[in-house]
Image (cartoon, rainbow, N blue to C red):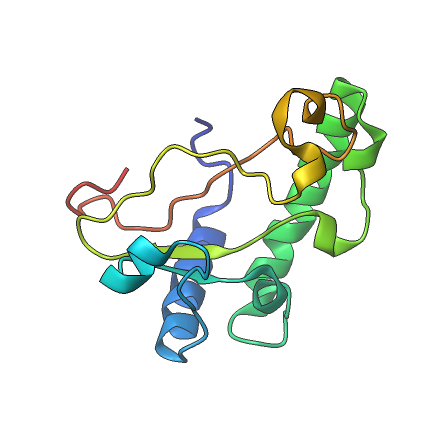
Length: 145
């Protein structure tokens, strides 16, 4: 955990952005997670919308993307993973996820491509090796951590 990783004004703008895009109906239920979809517990604003800086408070998302470019470059250098460096945006996922009160996400592995799954997948240069989460909920939200 890195406190104050993003400036407070950026976090506030992201929180407002997430709310505005939710109100605009741009989130969708995950298509593969039918159990959660039926219960309407989890909704996601996909990366293609997240990266459209002309929608909502795109300036805040653009600032985060620029910060994450620096993190990605540092990870690429330290991990010896040139494939993590700035590549086409589709290679790196950004999204907002919204959970209903009391909802949770079971332990899982963020792998979406068959060639990166299983024992051999750990050796694949395209395997995701770094994940970061930024929580935008207010501190006083029950269970929000």
